[in-house]
Every structure is written in structure tokens, then in C-alpha cells.
Length: 391
Image (cartoon, rainbow, N blue to C red; front, side):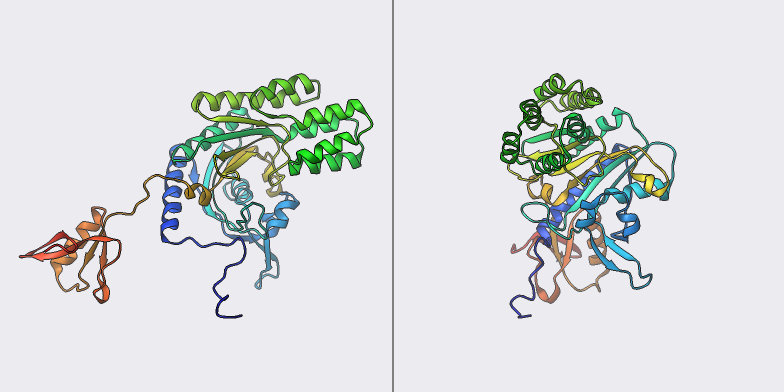
């Protein structure tokens, strides 16, 4: 490897330099404090686990995203988490084992074997919250409101709340007269959000009724009017009315609490890590091409650990969120101090300043920290703060 390429990082892997790292940490603290005020308990899942527990019951797509390696002590396969939600489900089901409703929040780095976003980011910093043990719509309402409350802690651009239900498209397709081959193609096109592909697929169908039904399904996204359109078109499909009612309740609750939020309904959802079982949501910010938060219901994820529990939650991409947060994340005012600690009065003064919120930096090798505008100067028998460069 040449000296000119030795410093390069892998594609999709980045580092946070001081200013960016400070912004991410500022947002992280703000959001976790908000979660805890809502009653969520903070947990710190491990970065690495045995894949037996990290991936069990979580779908092939998460398996493909997980970086794996052999544990030299046990010989078993370890995985670096690509998503923290499954770990939270394990903690609820196995480590805590509570019977009552449990609220957990967390934050940490993740790693993905391949990038699944544009621009490529294989190392998102994730912050999330989960509710376990509540199957009612009340938990889904709380999730959407908490998520919007967290985003309210930052100065994000205009937001759009995207709401759907993973069971809608599946139920409709199950009710259509399609072959297994047609089903596979249709599901792939819905997953890809391929409008042109869906139109070509519909044109190739000989059955005009089926073609019309699939074309209608493909158009099941847009404003809140989509809920009524879907009810009229597919209300006779088993389970669809209940799904639409759930979406309508969450929409009404979100609009009541946050009247300025834009709502987008997407009933063609086939996304996520495939462990979702019900209502799903995403949040998009104006000018950002990828969702800054995703979540939804994933009931029974804990069954692999011996305790099937209702569950719903979300995860926020902290790096993306911090990237356009304009709130003041400036560090405390910096002060330069003498590197000599022999003077007890100087040590006491430095301690007082740090307790008061100042950053006190020693002038090692006579160099003043570039962040500092003030310097501790001895005036008579006391140490005083004066602007750098003043006489």
C-alpha cells in the first residue's frame, strides 16, 4: 500500500472530526434527555453479538447487511450490529424479562456490510426508542408523537411524516388472482418503488380487471385522501379496514399535536428489515434524499428468545439529523491558563471556572488554544480573566 492511500477509509465509512462530532453528541444528549422525560429507560447494547441471537428471526436482508467474523475463543460466528432494534428486543425478552409494558431508548454506532442508502453510509449512528408489551394503537400513537417530539428538539427543515402498513399490499395481493411468478415480480417492483416498472407490468397483463386492480394498488400513495380511496377500492379485502383505521388514528393524532407536519400515506410499503408486522412510519426532511428516521410495529420479535411480546419503535440517523441541525451547539467559552500548577491560587481559580462552565486549556509549550478568547492573568495577588492580546 502506498503512503498516499494508506489514510483512505473504506467506502461508506467516515469519521467525525471535532466540530461534527460535537454537533452529533449535542443532538444525541438532547434527544436522549427527551426520551427519558417521556419515561424511556436508557440501555447500551453490545456492538458485537453471536449471530445466533443478533439475526434470529430478523429476515435475510438484515443478515446480508451484517458484518460477520469468527470468535477465536468460542469458534462461533460473531456479528457487528447493523441495526440496534433486534438487540433491544432481546434485552426486553431475555435480559429484563418483565411482564409489564417496558420503554427502552438507546444510541450507538452500527456497521453495514454494504451501503443501502445514497449517498453511501455504512456506519450510521443510531438513536432509537421502543415500547414492548403493548399491542394497542396507543403504543403506535405514542411512538409517532415521541418521534416528532424528538425532531422538534432540532432545527430541521420542513418535515414529512410517511405512514403505511406492511400488511396492506400483502393482503391486497393475496386477494388478487395472480400466479406465483406474477406475485414475485409485483412484490419486487413494489419494494423497488419502481413506477415505470409497475406500469410496464400492468400493460403486459391480459386480464383487464386484474390490471386495473394492480394499477390501483400501485397508486395507493399520496396525501391523506389515499385512506378513503383505499377503503373504497379494497375495503372488502379481509383486514384492510382495520389497517386503514389504525393509520387514520395515527394521522389524526400526529396532526393534532403537530398541525404543521406534512403527512404522506404510502400503502405500497415493502421496505425496512422485513421484521415489521404492522403500521410503519418514516420521516423525511426537505432537501434530504433519505429518511432521517424509520420505525414501526414488529410484534413477536422476542419469540426467538422465548417471550413473544408486542413491540413498536423507531430509529433516527443521528449523523444525518445533526448535519442540518442549526441549533447552537457551540462549546463553552475557552480560557487559556498557565501550564505551571505550582500556584495553588491558579489551581483554585481554574477549578472555579470549569465548575462555572468555562473550558480551561493549559498553554503547553507557550501555545494558546485556537478556541480561546480569554487568558488567565495574575493581577496583584489574584488571577483574572482578560481578553487575549489586551494589555
